[in-house]
Length: 87
Image 1 (cartoon, rainbow, N blue to C red):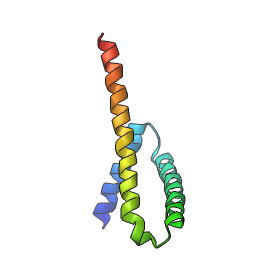
Image 2: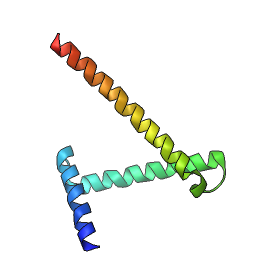
Image 3: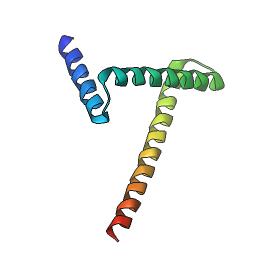
């Protein structure tokens, strides 16, 4: 258990360094995001009824689609920028 805690701590610290923020700032931002996602998920369930367990797979699939769409858009923008730079 301690080993896993250290691995997680180091991963978070490295991520903070890559973002140019302190680990505490990164932790606070993660907690804020968690609150926002919790609110979103509760709203998701309220609209559909049922229990969180019933809707978690669909909610995660929607989140994955959103992320995939955002990444695809960012890649297209990067490609366009690079093509302009090469001309």
